[in-house]
View 1: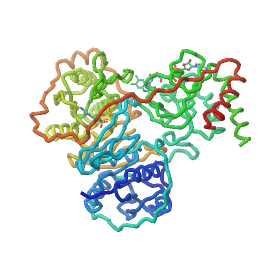
View 2: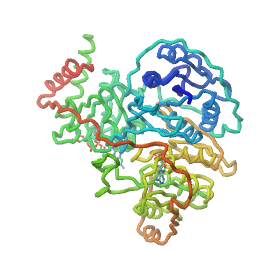
View 3: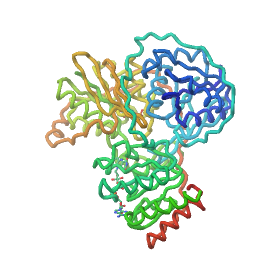
View 4: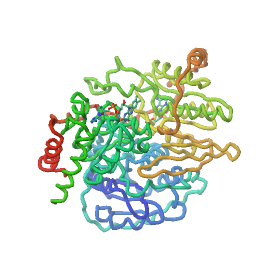
Length: 325
Length: 255
Ligand SMILES: Cc1cc2nc3c(=O)[nH]c(=O)nc-3n(C[C@H](O)[C@H](O)[C@H](O)COP(=O)(O)OP(=O)(O)OC[C@H]3O[C@@H](n4cnc5c(N)ncnc54)[C@H](O)[C@@H]3O)c2cc1C
Ligand SMILES: Nc1ncnc2c1ncn2[C@@H]1O[C@H](COP(=O)(O)O)[C@@H](O)[C@H]1O
């Protein structure tokens, strides 16, 4: 059986997400033959330097017109066409909306097993990778193995380290011929979030507000604190439902699942559905006036107090510490 | 339009999960079972399309006998009838998708709506796998859906990290629902009564004669790591704020 890890991801104007570097690092750690990177679109080649820095041994840039706009069915058909020639026994995707969409489709086409949103991958016996992934929104973890010849995984961002290991990648010239009729679902428009908004799933620090904030205009307090920290801003669900913040801020079981280094929960009670989205945080810091609030049971640090008193002072202290660095 | 909606029954999101001693599953006694929250958006969207354009909404569910309850609730929301694939076996996403696709294919449809993911296994695979199985286009994590009946096409807005995109595709197709697509209705009392009389057709999974070897094996479930004892500060805001920043800077070393 052929060997090797195929790492598949999207790029935007030649920029790649940090999770791609994490995936390349994990791919190398599996010690399973060559690490091959595959990405799409007009600026695909601009990612070469980064891929080389993180140890891709082979790269594929599908930058023809057919790949200018994402198509789940078209891309999956093309990859499936190339897989026999490339012969990977492991395929990795980022567990992003893009990666989940394409990996599940490709798994369906290849009739391969796929483990979604994995936290850790490790080479097991007899060439099977052992993966750990959250289930029940992180209330439990599952160790899983994939039984098919091609083992597929998507990797949760922000969990694994990205370690450089410079290589000189060979640019492969494998371009499958896929009928344009396979490209049925096509992206016709893409709208970026307003500039300057940090994406929660990739953020290192998150300042998140709940109903304790009382009114939309008070989110300014959190914006200020986030700015001092270089952090992203998130929220509990009711606050997004009220329209105080956009829906994309909503963290939890039915919102975003985040794994920052530090998560500040401000005026958030810590309902089980909210905790489900933040259990991957390295440090949880709670600010709440109710000493009995459940959020304190999962916090590393907490302040019992009125957020309107505490937050502005925290922001000042943070600025002072930052200024000394 | 004939719309099929897949509905999975899952533990209520407020449930505390207890892992069985053998690590092979969770303790099911005492669990409150509900319709997967994302499937409620799928049902609601199907009902709205039907209300606008006419047609039929059929629920397709797979699982043990308890799923009947989720199916009745879906019918009480307004779906016309249901097909239940009954099995007591634990099925992996690929097996579920294969069986669901087989039954959907037999039923015939213009559109299949599923949830973006089931909140128990969190796989986010079954929708796209049904699509791949049936050779249909897909669009996932959908926030907004427009059906152009004349052109036989869909236009969907989907959510990505830090962006949204518009996808166009012909139907029949598979669409997976994200929160934000709509606000699911509550069943009314008359509709709950009516639901009792609606047709629920049962098909045993074995009778489908499909090859359903698990492609993914769960070796064991285990509890996430315990969080360490917290340091909780109380007192004057000036003092606690200062002390917290000191701890984050000098002890945790994260600032
Ligand atoms: C199916 C389902 C899915 C759900 N999914 C999610 C989800 O994904 N994410 C999510 O967040 N929720 C979710 N929920 C809702 C969840 O159950 C809780 O209702 C919600 O998380 C509570 O939000 P909160 O903490 O902002 O508000 P509350 O529970 O009202 O808490 C507000 C907190 O602010 C504190 N406070 C008030 N004033 C101050 C002050 N001046 N200073 C300091 N503290 C103050 C209070 O002590 C309280 O602890 C879901 C619910 C269901 C049924
Ligand atoms: N056993 C099942 N019965 C009916 N629908 C299912 C089943 N499993 C998954 N689905 C559908 O597929 C979606 C995604 O599930 P999953 O891939 O398991 O996260 C769910 O929201 C359901 O709509």
